[in-house]
Image 1 (spheres, helix red, strand yellow):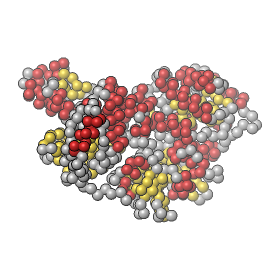
Image 2 (cartoon, rainbow, N blue to C red):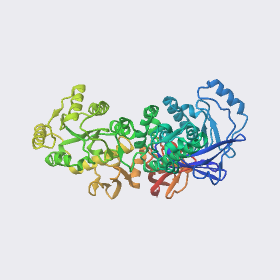
Image 3 (cartoon, helix red, strand yellow):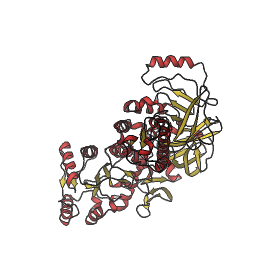
Image 4 (cartoon, rainbow, N blue to C red):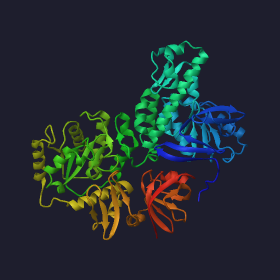
Length: 605
């Protein structure tokens, strides 16, 4: 079992991608993160307090001695400085904090890492993203990252989203004495304001004109109080957004304040692996795809990748391409219901795939699975070039992998142009049946006639019962890997209960239940027994019988494919259990603290 007994420690309590809510404890003091703190230098050690306790007591944190150096210091100079202080042996039990240079060696085993020269990263998107990613990947998951003198009220969301846990008021103080007034959308010179767009204590008692009549010192004091209040307000909102799983939606709007922030978000998306392994597989919050960056967010790219790599369509000859709908899931929308009613006697012959932005394509079997039934996007009828390019790529990949004798596209407008592009690209004939409105009587009649004209006695057809099983298999493959569905749901299995609360049974055993909230499967112990041989999404624990939750110290090994929210199998020599992951497999293995899994069923072998 991993040792987690040192008094100084950091524990992650909640996650939203790389952003975390946690608690840093050292010297009998607790600091909730993410937070804004004050800093002072006293006798070679750093003393700090968070904004909520600064008037009561100070949380003192000892930090190893260090030599300050700017970001562009040559690496050989950084190495020489390390040799100067290397004889001082670090100990997390005595000095839980250590200062690191963005390009220097990162020591192991500390609860708090302070990023030296952090202020030099402001405005430099490449340096910012590469530094934060490098540091976060090397330091323990259960450690806090502090970036001094980097934060202000309008870049806080980016910093926390990237993986920073602690910031300070340095920029608030400096800006105040430069007559800069913090807002959520930037810093404004007090001289240019005619009104104060804030309702903090300073702003309700003053006007820009009255502040300008004060002495430089008094003016700076008032602006500092306001700037601090704006940072506190923003940090409180960020913590709530983390709890709701909505920080990404927020950062897509706030990053527009400065070009370097927008570029930093794009660079974070390019480094897909860093965010992907930290991003939950499911969320209760809706996904708002309202900006160009939405196409690159983890949930969108992950869905497209899994459709490409894990999904296997039913063995049917006819593919029907349909437009998406604003109502989710698609099959419950008025337009799709009208189409399906018209084709009710033909649905067994056709396989349906929806073309959509931002997800590219969504097979009917996965229409419930997050985020296919959980996204909102502006509906204008016009697609931008990036949306079209992504949809063309997804549909092209799909048709290259999976072959049909007949492809019918019942689409208009931009959807039709996408299908034409794919048809030309692949030299694959696609028949179009919609005229202006896909739900009009003429369009539906043409669609029905086209399908009937392709039918032959040997045309494969699936029964409604088989369609249910194929849906459960497709979701299993999406969750656990290609081929899982056929093992979990054998040919003689049955699916019971009404849509969308399907339950898969085999003889007298219940194997899995479809959770309609997320469109994922919840396994039973009998279902887990069928899947254990695949060795996917398995967590191996010490020889104990778990109850309720499993903590990270009890984990020996976890499949690195596991993401927060995943259904996982837990095993040792005594038990087999199933539950939901609270952290990634990598974090489970590397962490000494925190709840790793919420258990649902436990059985002895």
